[in-house]
Length: 190
Image 1: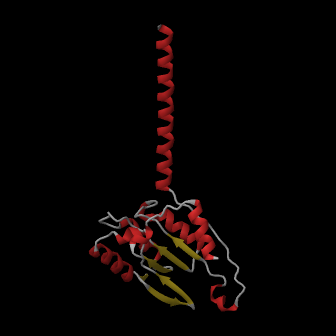
Image 2 (image 1 turned 180 degrees about the vertical axis):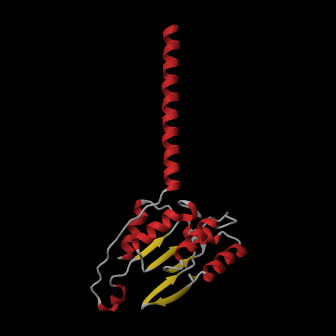
Image 3 (image 1 turned 45 degrees about the vertical axis):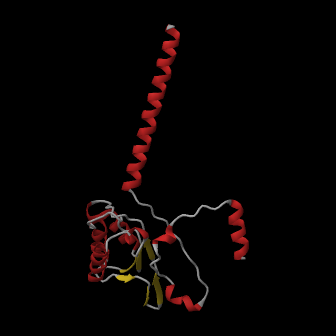
């Protein structure tokens, strides 16, 4: 009987230690995911003279900020942008969350970049969930800072056309397809 009880206690201890380690790992992972950002660099070579206006241009694309701040007033993100010295910054949606009522994280980023760089903003699905007055507040703020706001619109800057489309949120819903359905769709596209 004592051996059975000792075995149960040992199994329980192992389970508790395992649970604590998994919880610790997940907590660290969530902290890192919420307090760091990733940078991916691509270089494109275009051998067509009609795209000469893009030669030597640096473009930063930022999405899914979700009103997060990286450092005081987004200084870490702004410093990373300044280090890259882009010609254009594309803000491609989900800069805030649908349930946000204030936009300090996003606005602090705009305050730190809009005077130095050409910034272009297009709405994301999270912004679509905002009230009309909140979305107007964001648009008005961006426009006051000289940011191009593209809501089903196009703007030509230095010979480059930038397009911002506002899709209805129903198009953001993930569709689940079987492998066979995907293969049929692929064949139809060819």
